[in-house]
Image (cartoon, rainbow, N blue to C red; front, side, top):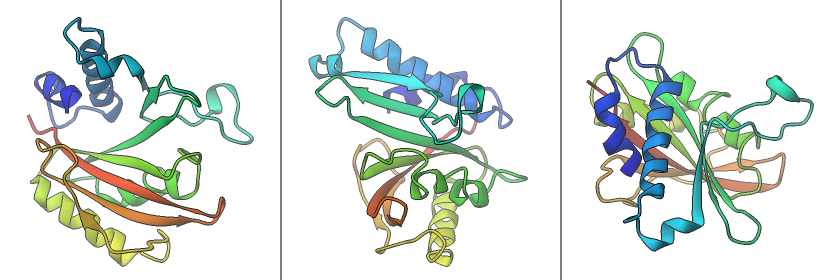
Length: 190
């Protein structure tokens, strides 16, 4: 939430690209973490923007890149992996969000395979957040076989300031474990 609230004024138009928005958010988080008045628990975390991830058969510039990874400095260096997609009319709809480069990255164990929880962020650039939440939930329900949906989607509140949060749980056949995907929609309308 820190990253989004500080980054929102920098978003200049509905044509703002996903990497730019992600960069604004991660830079804002880094600034919070560097602040002398930051809560003491923050010393255990770092944030990475567009880091390469290990992927079989991909090396160098061909490696896949998660959008945001928040890493802890405790033993094992656990991470929380976020994939982000723009949501707006004319080419940035729910198909990309729920597709192989969106949710599919987690379901297919491309990102976050060590973990049972990950997150999708929707950068809403047109219509309302409620509109996109409804469209995404409908897409997940209608494609439950392909997306390996294991239980009903559930609305949740993790952070009070974020009004549009829910999660869905999916099988990951490649590794034999389920993944809970948290869905977060952020207002990126100028």
